[in-house]
Length: 180
Image 1 (cartoon, rainbow, N blue to C red):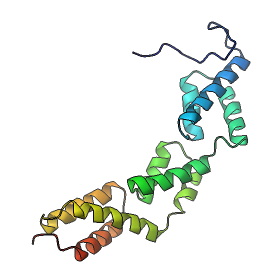
Image 2 (spheres, rainbow, N blue to C red):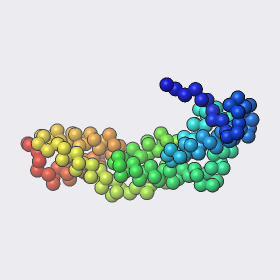
Image 3 (cartoon, rainbow, N blue to C red):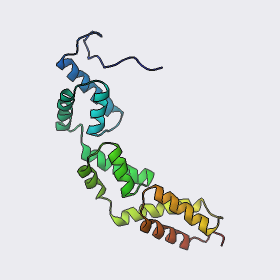
Image 4 (tube, rainbow, N blue to C red):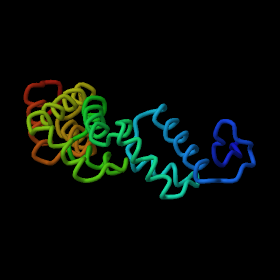
């Protein structure tokens, strides 16, 4: 069942109170604080949430500017956190990370700065770790099948062909768990 609540009512306000600028600003602050309590979010994600709740753009910008000023909204830190967790938990490539950052509303320059922290060797090490895990689950299959499955998994994570072929080659050269 969906909630019928349209906008939060600031403390001390009756439910049918007119939407004054002060009320809207209080409501916007409450929305942003609640969203940030749940999880970190980009400025764009918060702007969209305020728009969905009917907060006027000028009020949204004022509130978001203030939250950015005091450091509660920090897209650079948010992007760095997404890059770190995307690599560690999901094994995403730089390309996959860029897509994820774009989906979450991080601007291009901020995303590029966060992704630049991942060098070629770190990206290959992540791909190799993923390939080793996938190779372990394909032991006993024909080599061509194993190659396809490992390569497909890495490609879906956004790794380029040179990284994919290098990782597949290294993992399967070191592993004798296949049938010819």
